[in-house]
Structure formats: structure tokens, C-alpha cells
Length: 326
Image 1 (tube, rainbow, N blue to C red):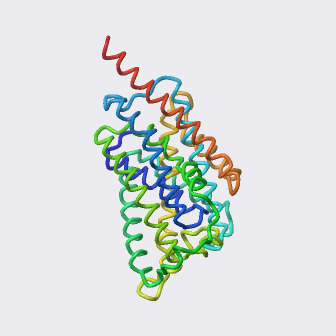
Image 2: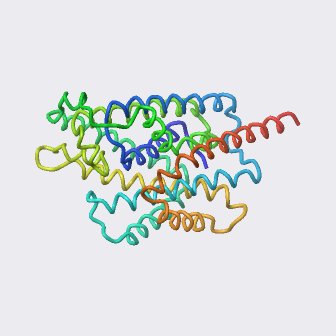
């Protein structure tokens, strides 16, 4: 696996964007404050580790410890499939047969995974560019719907700290920041710094727009992001949610593809056909990790995998130092 700093940013950004699109949390000023707190904590966790572990650790896979990063990517793939199943069951999507969706997603991800991580990184750059462009369209076309009184309305009972905890739970890509940085051969730190900035900007800007446009409607919606896009008319003839349905689908495929490539890379020394094995576990787990089960398990495993990823990076860095001292 090889990534550039820009590709690392694009992959991480789309992992977060997909989770953000599928989030059921309402849009309010409390959520903006909670997100800022969460991102600051994540920054304090990740950046010192990145600075300590030098660029020379790129590509290092320390022995049997690689099983733990593989488990993380399998778990993340399960979450992605579970989220996609949840959102297709809502009124925003018109797919009635979940098994058809899963088969299409799995076969597409399997084909894309054969192209390698560099191809996934390039695809992530294209999809993230589409997403940013669509967000600009959403912003411009939603301006007539902005209402200042929505921002001051007392419709969200969730506290700032509760939103900080929720955002931290949804940020299951944080272990990927650490693990994938080992396979980034140039611009690692720059890509990660830009990722944190773009993540805060993404959530903050869209949440502010959503709070001022949809207001208390976002509390009632199953998926507030798609509720927000329904307020936007493209040239007065088409709602912009069709654009984000496309991005959401591409984001799901990309997330599963990256997880399959990364997990199979760590497991290939133990299993033949590791990609198929990883996909089988992701698919089976995706049917169970849905709805409340996602929110109930994500926070716990995010914390666990962050700790494991830090130990993994330290182990990789230690191996490099030992090799240099010989």
C-alpha cells in the first residue's frame, strides 16, 4: 500500500464525509461547539504520535501485531455497510431489497480493491472534489431559505458535551489516520493537518447552514443532511439531494474498498484470498451493526482501536530504530 499526502487527506476526508452524511444528529449551534471540542481532542491525540513516529516508518508492518489493524478495518467496513443499509431503508432512497444493494456494493468494492490503494487514493481525490463542488452548489442554492431566527431557536435539547461525545464516536476514521500514515511516503504530516482543518470546516459549515435553513426540522428528520438538501433547488427544477445520493453511494463503496485493501494487506500472510474473507466478515457484520447497534458500539471500539493504533505505530517506529542501530 502506498499513498501520497494528498491521497491520504482525500481518503480520510471521504471516510469522515460518509459518516457525516449518514449521521442522525440534528443541526444546531450546540453541535458546532461539540464538534470543535471533539476535533481538538482528536488533534491532541494524533499529532504528538505522528511527530514522534518519523517518516522512515513508512511501509513497516510489525509482525503479528498487524492482525489488530486488520480487525479495525473489518469493523469499519461493517459500519459502512450497516449505515448504507439503514439509509437505504429510509424515505430518501428507493431501494427495497437490501440484499441487492449489498451484493452490488460488495462486488463493486471487490473489483475496486484489486486496483490497489493508490487507485483508491486517486478515486478518493475525485470523489472528494465532487463532494466539495456539490457543497458549494448547496450553499449557493440554499441562501434564499436561510432564516436567522432558526439559529436562536431553542429546539435542540442535546448539550455541547453530548455532541462532542457523539462526534468522537462517529470519528471512527481516527485510527485510520494513524495506520494509513505508515503507508504514506511523502507529505504525511501535511495531509493530516489539512484533514483536521477540512473536517472541522465541513462539519461546522454544513451544520451552521443546516441550523439556519432547516432549524427544528432537523430534529425530526431521520437524516438531517438529506433534509437540508431538499431545501435546495438546482436552477429551480431539481432538488440537490440527488447529487448527494450519488456521493453517499460512492463514499460507501470507497470506504469498503479502502477497508478491504488495508485489512487484506495485514492478513495476507495468514490467509489466502484475504480480500474475500474480509468482505465476508464485513457483509455479515453489516447486517447486525445497524441503527442503535452502531451508536452503541462505535464509541467503545473507536477508543479501543485508537489505543491499539498508537501502540502499533510505536511498535513500527521501534522496529525501524532497531534496524538502524544494527
